[in-house]
Image 1 (tube, one colour):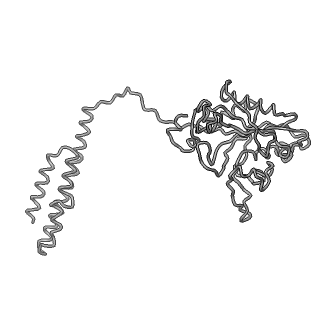
Image 2: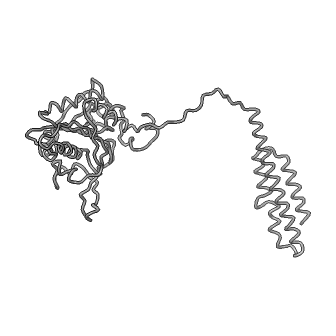
Image 3: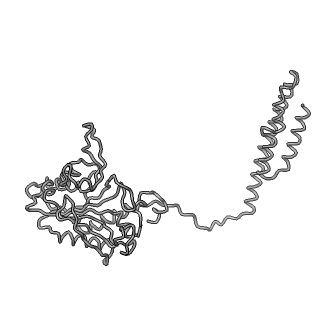
Length: 353
């Protein structure tokens, strides 16, 4: 057995000496140090030896194993160094080539357009007013002329939050629109001078939440910008002129718009403003529901009840309000046919902006 171990060692070292690449070296390791290698088989045969032979054979087998592992490690390092030297001698590096630019992050397209909308409104005299995302049912609905069990609540599928103070009470909601900010803003302004509240001209940006079916035109969360103007002698003509001017600033002087009568509980009269669909050029497509037009905002004169709830006397003051979706405007500007791209986090889409 001792002679066999000597032969195994000599043959293994002899075959290792002629190896020059890592692939052949790995094959040698499997053949000479693997579980089925001749050296490892000696250990499995120890049980057949006499008590006197076992210590001698075991000691020699360990010596052979250690010698082969050491030789393998030395050869592996030599092969790597030879490969590196060959690479340095034959390959060239052009140090005059420009470096690879590091990718830079940027604002989300929805944020970019939201800032553009607010910049245009700021040029038109609007100040930014922020309100909370989590609202009470009172502010989200009741003070906006939508009492409990009102049919208009069916227009908005709402995320209700169970009250921490009263189990089973769902008086807290994720706001379904930015309109609750109207009441908060009017009450804040009117509190400064209850007898003669100051005029208001504000824009209220924020995220809204609705529990509804996700489609190419709707999402469960979306940005919205609310506009509110309150003062003496405000008319529907002021509303139409303001929004038409905004559309020209946003989409160009030749942008086509139209107003359609509608109904919102917190405005009277109410209307919707449409833009000609830039995705299909007015011919009709899934985004505009084959109509050639895409609704970009709802608007109307502030309902007298809402004015009164905000602390403004409707016999003296009037006003108008509007709410628009920035994502839908991006779809118009860049001919995007699916609003779900904005929240899909696909880097291929986001890198285009």
